[in-house]
Amino acid sequence: MKSLLTLVSVIVIALGMTGCKSPGIFATTFDDGKKDMVVLDTTPVFPNTVAVTDFKDLRGDSNSAGTVFWSLCPLMPFGWVSYDRPEHGKAMMNTANYKHDMIASLANAVAVSFDTSRIFNSTYASRDINDLKGDLILDAEIYTARFDAKLISYGLTFVSPVLWVVGLPATYLDSQLDMKLRLYHRSTEKIVWEYPIKVEESGCRWAYGRTSEEIEIFPKMVREALNKAIPELEKYLDANPTLLDDKAVEKKAEETLEKANQELDNSKKEQQEVKEAEKTAPNI
Image (cartoon, rainbow, N blue to C red; front, top):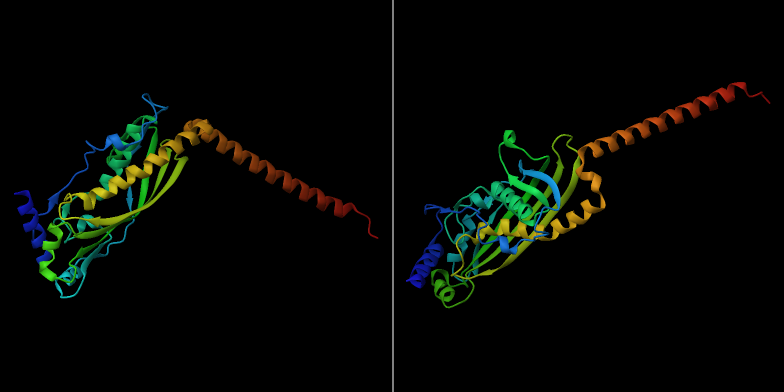
């Protein structure tokens, strides 16, 4: 029965992705993903509480889906779609489109990864600026969360699902994520840490693939990147313990400013002394 449903679904995909099908409902729960996340210790490494919020969406807005119909042309090996905003795609590979908040899912992925790692006492995601309780804020700028896909027809038009069912690749997916995380003190807005994430994952998929993988891949890429980033952050904070003390950071900034002002005063004083010396020097 499952095979029959799969065959029917892929044939429908091949015959046309009109966007009028029922959208898929997808939400990131991470119920089965925590086992893949880095864990530094059983107790918090640092006592701070971190609020993950205000991810800025700086992506482009070009979505192209009509090119998928090239897969129905004789001798054409594939049709394709290109989405700057895949959650708004009208013709995905496994379903019509998704009811999905991409930015919220990325923020949730970051919060769950940090909280699972136990690098801080607590890390949570919140979209309400008035609900923030953390002494540290973790936000991000999202530059790219792009989805490109090919529907492989092997030049056989609507006959291609027969090859998919017997095991040949049905689609080729390429997902790109480019973002930058920023951790800073809530009270002083002094930056503690910045980290760029630029990753890409691509490969063939088969007709029996999970219907959510086209969107699910982005939180997965975030988790994998943070598995490397979080241990590096721990070492960085261990080597620079005053960074987590906002008062220390503020004091250091004041000392730097005071030193700069003192150097400026000394420079002015030296210049004045040179001028005075020139005035009193005898003419030769």
